Amino acid sequence: MPLNFGPTLDGDIKAVLLDADRVAHRVKELGAEISRDYVDKTPLLVGVLNGAMVFMADLIRQINVPMEICSLAVSSYGKRSTSGDLSFLKDVNQDVKGKHVIFVEDIVDTGKTLKAICDLFEKRGAASISICTLLDKKARREVDGLEMRYIGFECHLAASWSWGPVRSALSPNVIPSSSAAALSPNLASKIKHPRRKHDKQKCDQSGYGIDYAERYRNLPYIAALKPSVYE
Ligand SMILES: O=P(O)(O)OC[C@H]1O[C@H](OP(=O)(O)OP(=O)(O)O)[C@H](O)[C@@H]1O
Image (cartoon, rainbow, N blue to C red; front, side, top):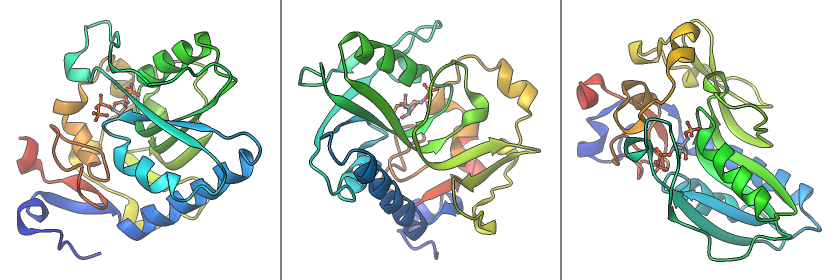
């Protein structure tokens, strides 16, 4: 896909990892899966703001069974305590007791955010809880027992980060090879509380709701940013 989003933003982009068509295709598949699985359940999709905003907006329009939506926001990495504790900036506006909840995320990294939210919603009496994430960085998980039921694309550790869509063929044009991405599994396991907003590694995927330092969420694709953006 040509980089013609606009001169200001395009100048910051090193490579398009997942173009808008590819994302849209996968979002459509996810919508169909959810529609099939929840045909008789009227799920409540809960978007975790701000990152999930773009993905959620597209996803719900690919779901063709009765459903509800709401959103919540928690403190971002840069504002959390060193223990990684979450605090709500915005809670959901309804009682979730008895609801079939699907959390919608742009990206799951350590999993701490979703683990805390899932535990809370379990205590609140949700009938069931599932997770739908556009991107999954499974290799960086730091919590146990967090099952991703719906995954758009999986980022996995090999010699370097690579990207592969779940349940469909790997396309060569979605494998980035930036130096920022070349994080060894050993080092990855030592990073307890990555600060997403200021972590160079996070420049390897921005756009479609995912930010770097609050910018780039409006890119219609997912891209790696040039080192000049964060150095
Ligand atoms: O799996 P974890 O390690 O907990 O990280 C994942 C969380 O980090 C991102 O949010 P962020 O705090 O950057 O805020 P944002 O949604 O406003 O971008 C993302 O949207 C998830 O909510």
